[in-house]
Amino acid sequence: MSQRGRKGGGTVFWNEDRGRYTGQLSHYDAAGNRKRPKVHAATKAECWEKLDDLRAELKKTGSVAPRDLTVGDLINDLLLHPPADWKSPLTLINRRNYAARITMALGKVKVARLTVAQVERFLADAAAEGLSADTLRRLRSTLRLAIRRAERDGKATRNVAALAEIPAAPRRQSRSMNLDQIRALLGLDLTTWWRAYLTCAVMCGLRPGELLGLRWEDVDFKAGVLRVRKCLKALPDPVTGKRVLVLEELKTERSKRTIRMPGQVVAVLLALRKEQAAARLKLGAAYDVRGMAMVFGDGAGAPKWPQDVRSHFQTLCGRAGIGEGWTPREQRHTFVSVLSDSGVDIEQIADAVGHVNSTVTKAVYRHQIADEITSAATVMDSIFGEAKGS
Image 1 (cartoon, rainbow, N blue to C red):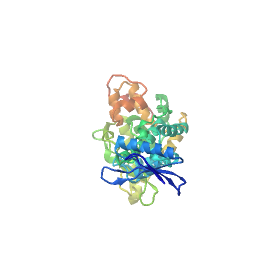
Image 2: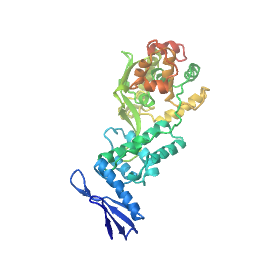
Image 3: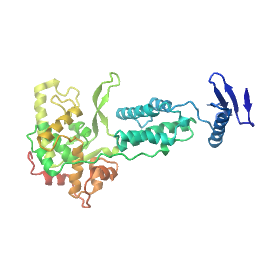
Image 4: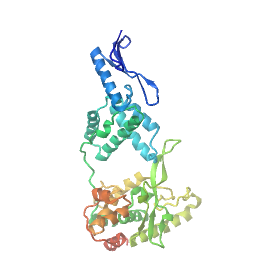
């Protein structure tokens, strides 16, 4: 038996299969296709209320979003058809991780019933697990993008993720070595490779991937500069799935930069090149079989795994008596802090480290800012000119 309201009001009837009342609203979408969205409820009155909501939605937006579509469906569609700017395989890996977390928490929730409060509870739970503020933002942006696509296609009427607020979360504080710690590290009895790596890290401010991705063709001894053009990344092989080392383009054009080398950097790189020339003579065709000519390759000229560098770096820090809790990336923080404390303008520091603007430099890396403009290379030479190994 059915009960009809006024014209355009829809129909409510008892559904024997479901054992509930079913309400149905008939309308035409923008393409002229007839649509019959349905709602279900335990009572007739509740079913009419849900139909009223459908009519209000239709009047407001010109369409009615599907009632059976889940958050998981939207996330799966996003991963199957990723945005064009998700170019890097590493970006895809990270987004899949965010998507998996969203699906685990909200995947079964109907999109039509998803609320701002649910999204905020999800983010709060993630913050309680210790996730950083940056990760929380990326989680929300992934969900927001998925719902925005659904909005575009008439499958959602409100993007609740865009309305959700991100809870407070601890931000990792920038950390840098002081001059005594730097000198203790550089004062160790280091191999030629490690002296060159540490000196470049502290005095040039490259990212760890940029350092390991540096090729000899990027080093211009005649001009006295390093040209940062590539980044070494460990990415999954598309065939085997195993992680392999590849040289990738830098993320932004601003990251591409030319850095004048301090005198000590020139000296340690010349020593490293001489040592590698000897290794090439000894190994012959077995040296640098990929023809990559890496500055910081392994003993056979192949790219060096970042985790191996990190592990040994921490061992060296322990030997220097400054603690093993440091990471190679913090040498970049050290570079910024040394320049900042020496009076280099923040905009020049941002240029030197390849930031899009000085905002990140100020918020994450610097410790002190002064207005005097000086040369980064000159500062490093003046500070470390008498360091051991110069």
